Length: 337
Image (cartoon, rainbow, N blue to C red; front, top):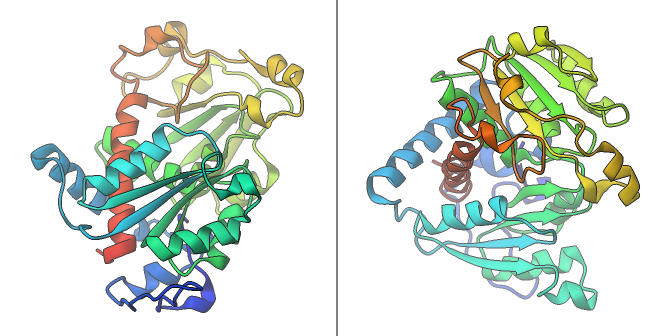
């Protein structure tokens, strides 16, 4: 679900045009060659990244990290602004002894009209893997088709954000002190139409025995392709436009996302949706004592700051879990274990 790899490359890594690269076979063939929509296709397949993320977390807390990726270089290619995703991938690589080459749309040859595929081929000459954030849905697949090195999708337009889904899953099981989210009710609240994090998380959670509630303002509902995929997997789904007391009382995980103002056709349309929901102390009072409140951040006005001190507010811890999961993904991608 998170690693994009061209099928034609198989288990080998061919040279990028104009580059001489050494073939390496240390990465598990299954992890290297699986496609984006089937990389993690069962609950069992997620046990490995979760276990490795826990190992990475223990290493960071004990010694600051490892040297497992010493000599490896990651290209951080971001065509959109990012704080958490960009920095967490960079920190993940550095904490495992590797190096990072940062690339932005404003400082690269993209400003001169260079195509995405040419940029990716260029970075493959210098780096062992690429992390890509792009405003166009499907850009990661385009990049993977051109790339002789692995590509991680760090968000493509309103499409998907698979590594966020993996860190969200890791957050849920860590906060709940469980091995899986089986039996939980997860409520997703906010702009579900444009929020790529919820698209990926809903599909990932459909591999488990969960119940999903989608709460969104009219016109910003979860896309049909997501709800269709989730229900086809046998997950019970409820959709509504409002947060009722009964729904909150039954919620184990409340996942809040902001209005994606940059995705709206006009500023007026975005302004009309702003402030549709606010999670404040009154809402928190209706949640279970064991509930977990999450947010991919940045937040605007969806969660009041008064909630930050509530022990159920996990959104800052969520970022720490994200570091560990992205360390695990890079380790799997470049070492295989």
